[in-house]
Length: 88
Image (cartoon, rainbow, N blue to C red; front, side):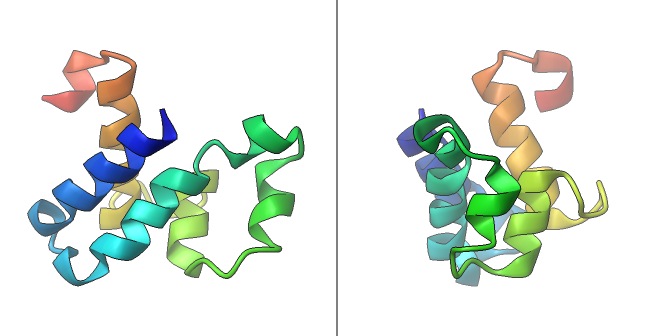
């Protein structure tokens, strides 16, 4: 699931005006389920990783819902959950 999230975030980056950050967005997708793998709070894990602050904020739901990184992440998760009203 993390690989799908990562690749989808990477591929959608240009559509959100984030083409130059596609590699970082890929990493965001990889880290999005890190808490599930390591059985530790995501906030704690992200504090130990060198990931851009806005990516961490998007993963933790802290950034503005209008922020492009958060919008992209929420679209990826909505697609994964078949939440079609959010996807459209």
